[in-house]
Length: 296
Image 1 (tube, rainbow, N blue to C red):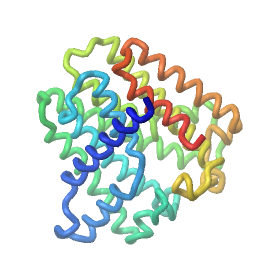
Image 2 (image 1 turned 180 degrees about the vertical axis):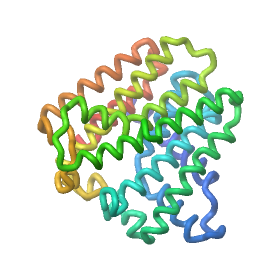
Image 3 (image 1 turned 60 degrees about the horizontal axis):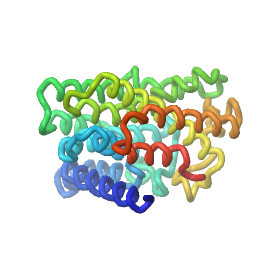
């Protein structure tokens, strides 16, 4: 069974890599340094969890892979741009990302900002060109991703994260921040496939919505656990950064064991949302467990 999912994951990773390569301008095209930096940001490793969620949710709901390529590509471009900004000296000031120099270290700060600025509109250009979707669905998809990125989503969550440095937040406040800064884009990954499914019953739309939101919060709690317990060489970024920066995190508030317990509880809740989908949701179940169990 594990080999089956490994093969599915490898297939989806290769598929989105090909789609990303086609979407990005070649590094030989002027302005060459900018395009080279954009490609460095996108092709510097990573697990591709968000596009994998797009494909796995689409697999569950019977959406063609060709139709899913656009949201999978666009959401990964958005994620790449967010990491570039996140690593900047004005934000988390990180030197390592995925075991390699961060973009502003590999190139320079100005080029990193411009590359990230270019990745975001490229994502929406990809969404605007999606095939096999009505004009109404295309607009809904663009709005879904835009809301996930904006001030009521990822950007708002990052703002809250910076404002909370050195502060003590409640568990509920931390989870709300997580739901925005990380969970919003993960939710959009699942919800985009639901939008592209034809005549999806409302109860299935709600189940997918709840699954995406729940596993998004679990993802960030696990990330923060790994920041405490993981080794830089293994997690691909500097460990212990949250404590050094005075970040408000779930492990920092309640301790590792309770954070791990909350993560497991969220996983159970997410998996319960998939009960009615039967074996069609097996890839989603595998990904949910991977999100919570990675690094164990």
